[in-house]
Length: 69
Image (cartoon, rainbow, N blue to C red; front, top):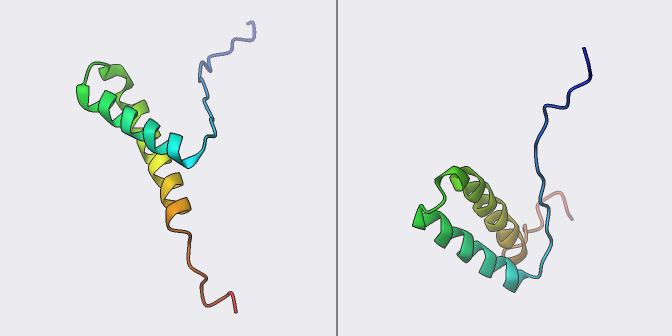
C-alpha cells in the first residue's frame, strides 16, 4: 500500500484593508445571489461569514469588559 494523499483542500487566507474587505464582501454576496456558481455556494457563504465577522470586529471593537479595570 502506497501513501496516498486524499486531502485536496485548498486554502485562501488573504488580508486586506477594511475598504477592500467591504468591497469583496459585496462581490461575494452578488456572486452568491446570482446562483451562477452553485457548487461554490458553501464557499461563498463561508467567505461572507468570515468577512462579516472580521469587518464587524474592526467597526465595533469589543468593549472593555468588567475584567479590564
